[in-house]
Image 1 (cartoon, rainbow, N blue to C red):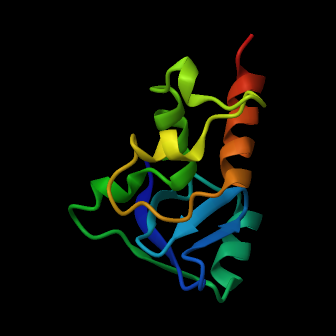
Image 2 (image 1 turned 120 degrees about the vertical axis):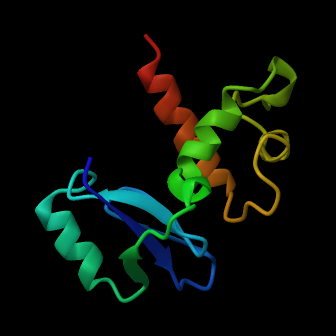
Length: 121
């Protein structure tokens, strides 16, 4: 495993996407250089909406990004927690997320749900 880095955003919404990942104001811990290609690292470093620093000790809670938290939450839902369209309800998901989790949108939920369905044989 590479060096642990903390990537945070200064985006007004508190959530910012680059290189297929969502970054929060609290930060997302990633492994350098393992988690991204050289081109992606160059793009991340050049992005003014992101700050990259060494991850301080004790940042284990930040290790999973918002999409990973969503995936975990969706895995805990019951049939009643899904809408008529088959997509998980955002309110149902929130009960399985850590308190204060921000940045969850219906679009993001639908995107994560579509990824999960595509992975299921």
